[in-house]
Length: 480
Ligand code: ADP
Image 1: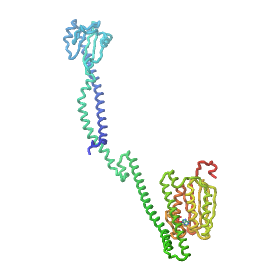
Image 2: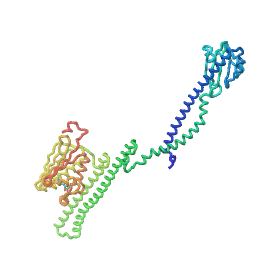
Image 3: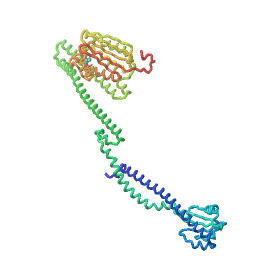
């Protein structure tokens, strides 16, 4: 494409710069040169005039017939004026002497009268010219003056206009080609950049380009990371949907199977009907628990994506939550379950408070405690603890003497629908979402989860919250 093809091209800019700089340099050189030339020419003319004035003065001093001498003097373009002692013009070779005004006030005449020699330079009546005057005092008191017109600066400058236009045309042509060559040379390293691998040609790039290339590289890496996150999210979403469908289908199939048996009259026995009814009730309970867990998780997902104000509308607003009181209600609700499983449930609650969403914190503690009972053994125990760490961070801890978790399973159990032993989980009414809710609820409260477990010995899970700041409470109360 032609360098002039588009309005903003590098060639245009380079051309503009080269042309302006070159032309400005030539113009300045012309003006300064002209002034220098004019001053030199004037100096030469002045010297010549001085010498001529001396010669004419000597000739006049040695004669009595001044006018005759002067009429014979023929110096080209030179004006000769003889001025009497009283200032009247006796002779002038260009104007009638009688019509000329008194010359005793002219600076060169005044100087000649006082020092014997005087000179002056005045603007001429002709535009662009200056008149140079040289005056010499004669022995008889008269003054002879010689004057010559000299080209002024403007005249010299005007004489340069023609050549200057020619030079400008040459500069335009030279600038055009220089700009094209220069802009191609400037662009070359830019075109060499491989935007897919900006670091590859970094050595050939201009050093000014390095920060930009580094930024492109880091943005590329970030983009790659985000694409991977999106792909992972998409995979997880698809897996989650497939899992939900499967998990919902199992109790629904059971419910519709038992209901069909009853409605078709196949369950004639009252005991059978009761049994099927109890099974339907249990499966419906499992379905409700599953739907509730899915809802909680989806709310947590939405809260993670939204701003903090919107999170409150999804999950409920945050408020100070008294951890001992909360663990106490969890203990009371799970006491019958623990009793049934022959697990002893203990509470070791120390004063502690957290600003959070009460329903979420309750669910977090309930899920941990419920797991500790369900994955326990008859005769085992569970301890629910809360308090403040030495460094001021509040915590909730659930410790059991249950079946424990193998080290390779310890990370996986926080994934949605992951169960170490699927049949055991289902037999005990698990949805496979309990720890996923714990993980997201903890993250929402910026809490960390620490899991310590040994197969066949037991499990200890500690959720530690950041140091709390209670806006309305006095400082002393905060550390209680
Ligand atoms: P579930 O509804 O199956 O209990 P969770 O997400 O709560 O789902 O737990 C995931 C899995 O982690 C459980 O199926 C179980 O295998 C294991 N697990 C959770 N808590 C404990 C624990 N206290 N002791 C042993 N295993 C546990």
